[in-house]
Image: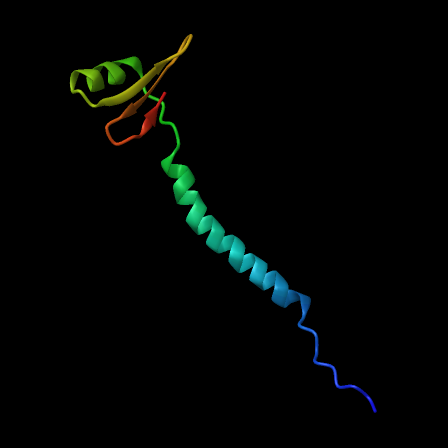
Amino acid sequence: MKEVKTPKKPLAYYYGIVLIVLIVFNLVVTPILMEHQVKETDYGTFMSMIEKKNIGEVEVEDNQIIFTDKDQKKYL
């Protein structure tokens, strides 16, 4: 007797699943990465934030100052 085989799912079905997973992954990861970006500011903005006591943490390197505000947003 001949065996009855179930039909294989087409390759497009698997491409569709991978595409959906990638879209969902990008919808979740992209906002997280955008939240952690460094915003570039000038020295005057840095000084005015110091006067308003809106600075959380400061790192001074050779020719740049990296700091965070009270909301933990990074600035360069």
